[in-house]
Amino acid sequence: GPAPRRPSTASAPPMPPLDSIDVAGALKRMAGNARLYRRLLWKWIDTESDAATRLRGKLEASEQAAAARDLHTLRGAAANLGLTEVAASAARLEQALNAGRDGTALLAEFETTLARTRGVIATGVTRADD
Image 1 (cartoon, rainbow, N blue to C red):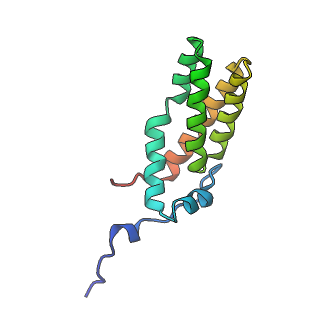
Image 2 (image 1 turned 180 degrees about the vertical axis):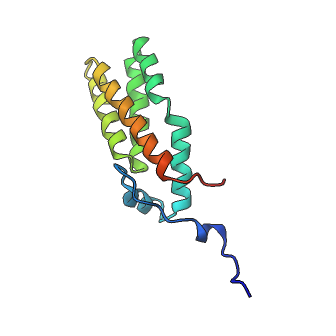
């Protein structure tokens, strides 16, 4: 007869390599749970896709300290998920704002990095079904 169906966690496809993303490091932090990792990557897309727009609003309102705090949180989350380029770009912008420097160029770089990483995830990672 047919082989018994394995539970869905076992049949979840393995994570593919993703350009500019430290998949191996992130999976290690999640005890190898690719299903959880996929879900968190998509949750990150859903919550942080507009991060650059939100930051721009804070900077235009001269809320540099609030923007720097947001970047600090975002950087930690990105690093945890292996989004090394996003984390590095967020760190550069955070440092500039904390030093009182103009962050316009770095914000544009952050926005580009965010969009590129979002694209890598969206094309390379299947959305978990839960």
